[in-house]
Length: 440
Image (cartoon, rainbow, N blue to C red; front, side, top):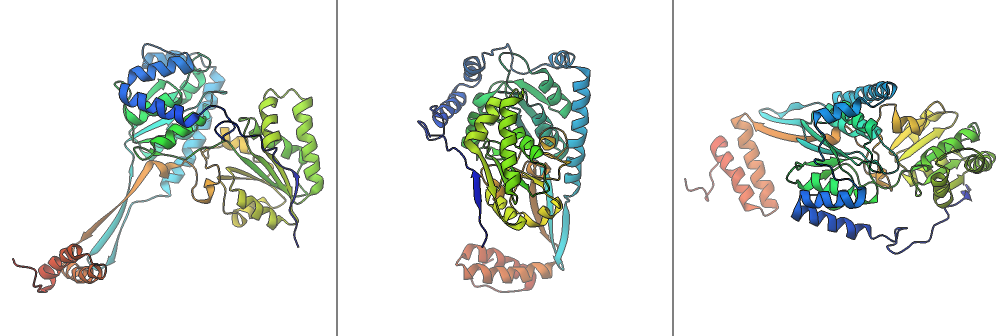
């Protein structure tokens, strides 16, 4: 009989006022901002930007000249790196788009059914910038939307401590944004979703963000589309006895630094590796000069988890129960996870691959499902920016007449007389059927 052993469990930090590890009532604040922007437009947007970001420029939209001046301040190597990473993202997104196709099929003689993939017309991308300038999010959102064929993409990013995030603006520009706004937080999401005097309303909003941004997207969903209901970053590593415990520790902490509430989970068949990993994590946090050790250490203390199982198959089963955002496979045969696992945002196979590659450079999208959403959805991709429509055309009189008779019977079985009569009319026109109700 198998046994699951927890060598480290989450510390379960005590819940505070709103039961969400915060004394701030995020939903109430967000709802207030949304209603204010709805009623007062630009004036409300400016007031909240001043309040939260200490930012109140003449125009939140950057002019073409301002964008070029900003890009001129970005180091040449950074610009080259942005373009290299974006070429990777573009190549993968173009391959995704190529895998989709419009089609038309004649399912029966004279009955033609088709499918068309039509881009969303107006998309808003949010590029976060609270703790870090997350320029990689520009690649993942703006560029992917443009590859999908979205004709109008606007993008918002906040100032960081009152400063313009120059590299992020460069990334937004090179990704293909049609308009760039230096604006953040709930006010940016509300402005894009509702429209103001100077910020156009969009049909769809994508991009990661803090609790305020995520809550705003959730509250506005329905009036606009959104990519995902986002939560804190998650990482889960499946490792066997062949893995390097030091590599496991490094990779767990690489994601734990995202914030103080990042679940970092190790599932392994080796108790020796589990204990060594725990020791390495503590040493890295306390004895090296990791600049984000405080954040990573908080996540590790409160949300870190180490689980030992008997078999690799059991490791995959337990991993599937987490449905984690990022799942890294550090085993002797990593590709078997492609068959064994069903619930994950993205898989990272083998020691030569790491989650940080996916976050920053490799080309797959880093906007991924969290909080178990991988059980029912994947991450941001070209398909999210496309609306799959169907169309129908009956070209044959015989086919329409037969469908009319079938529709009449099927609709009356459900007691939909109006539907039935629509079918009857075609049966009359094209199959010579007679119905008492038809008086023409």
